[in-house]
Image (tube, rainbow, N blue to C red; front, side, top):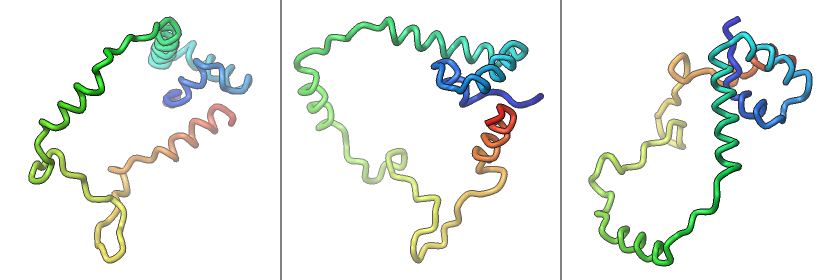
Length: 119
């Protein structure tokens, strides 16, 4: 089997999958080191967040950030800060949306995993 749990790891760690799907996912985790590692990382992240305490913020933080923003030069002419052109056609534009193997088939791969999980 080449399917991995991917985006299903988070709901699995949160206990959000229906029992039948969770059982199948856990059966896969039992034999797949990659998914077992991913599930362990998801659970560790949740434990770290649950154990986190509040962070005290300096009273003058907003003022300091606003002062920093006034020192940043304008974006005009800086190619690293220009907004990218949209990837979808705009009225009167001839831009072509990225399709095919370069675009990735996220929906198709999720459907395959849903079929595998019995969703």
